[in-house]
Figure 1 (tube, rainbow, N blue to C red):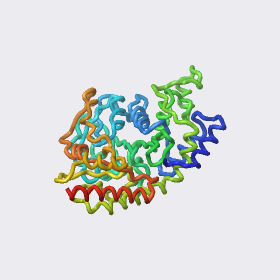
Figure 2: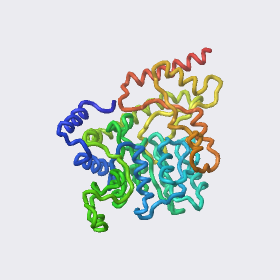
Figure 3: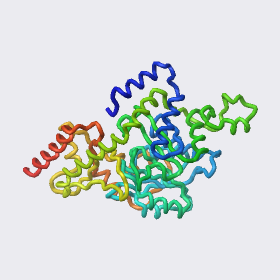
Figure 4: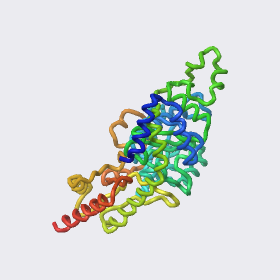
Length: 390
């Protein structure tokens, strides 16, 4: 696990106070996270998936200025996780899938440009596996076509582009605190923004459409003086709240994040150096120029060869106790759920298909010890020895 007795003690102490529902500790956690990574406001919630739903719900609210409207198109990568897409659908927007770059795995700026139509109103950038997108290129396209930029950074906490944190380039960004991510509150997420009114709307939607947790209650009570201000609902909403014990855990995890990322970078560098001798068989993710990759995992794409395919090496690794996973959801545009909603595919998705059909990843997390890393390298070496012997 990515936590130890520090977090367990903090969690338990918070439980013993009996103050467990969202309150002062959650607010302290939000402020500390935002302050630590260069955002003005943080709005926590119960998962990274909920963070995407929350920010898109706020952006499509009729109350929000310069909002998105039902039927608007939003360009996003085909190589992504499902919960980049589902909130887009749930908020009445139309996803437009584009291909990725084979080296960085990130959305190809040229493909963004090609996908823009008269209905396109936003770009949803997703830094894949901790690797920041080419934000200069994406911002240029966003400004050229007057498109809103939104960032799904659930896999990329702590990553930077030209020294600036991912999630801070667009109008709003999302992060995840899931158990296996860079830091954890067991389940949890956060939306970050410099837009005060948008942050307020996310606080409203997070808790039933209620103004209870907004900072400027007077704005709403003046508009609706006939209602009890303690129970004033001004927008549709959900219950996406995080708890005080989770926030107490998160406060400690924030202080550990930089160290966690350095360990992930070290582990990834170790693997890359060791596996470079197999570059005839694998291609590896290349970190975007001028970026700091926070390494969500260590991905491989198997090249066409006469010795093995992706499924064969994954079976060998799994049989030897090394967990492998697909690279996110692969080309999400191929999933059968797409038959249920309107969407558009711009151009061919050849790189996304290649990564889906031939890619896999192994863990690079901060809890890996030196012995585990050496074991992984040994198993890879044994696989190639056996294949070449046969």
